[in-house]
Length: 275
Image (cartoon, rainbow, N blue to C red; front, side, top):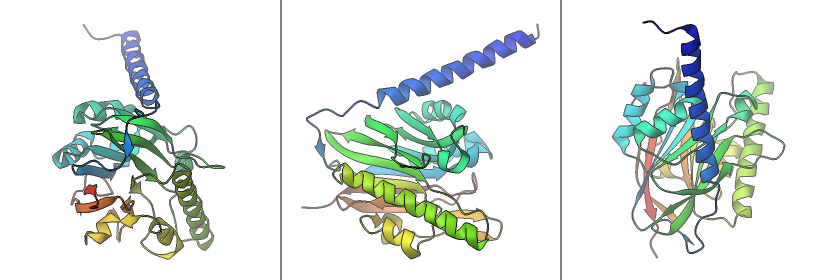
């Protein structure tokens, strides 16, 4: 017997409610503080990170999940992920908990898409990265491995949409403000060990890049993996990064050759620096 419109509507409403409650619980659960015994430090064993702007899974969610799964990351940093896809991706990849926040700086407070961190390790103190006077441009949380805690941050900074000089200046200034607020919030927290990944919408030059690398290391560039991460028609450029604080040692990294999105996934394996 074919489903009636009312049954279809009820099923869709149930699925939507389940997705909302899952995300609500996940976000609430990771807002608690880490155990008092945990110490600020990268863990003794190396950690794998993947950052990926997935273009709303517009080229197929299965393709995106496959690309991420092959890299076997501990932490997955997603940009342009639809809110409705977070639960499916987290479940399929086996990465819990998950945190999510809409990209308010790019699409306004009612955006259906945003930034997420999926993790195979416990997360604490999770939330939107502070951005006084502006919308959310990313999320961060304190991760815990073997009683060592560190911050994982996922950003999607303001974009440059066209070559109009006024827009170029405005978008660059917006990124400067976002980066300044990120650094200030990190320093206010005591400058803990941190890995920042994401779509910075920023070329590796001028004042914004200087600020990105003032306190942190461009991990992929350090390892000679600074190739193109974004393609749009004839435009090919590098705007996706991993930035790491001095406590981290970049061990391996790469840009994955994939067309499952307009961005290529980037990955990093990092461990603690020596004594």
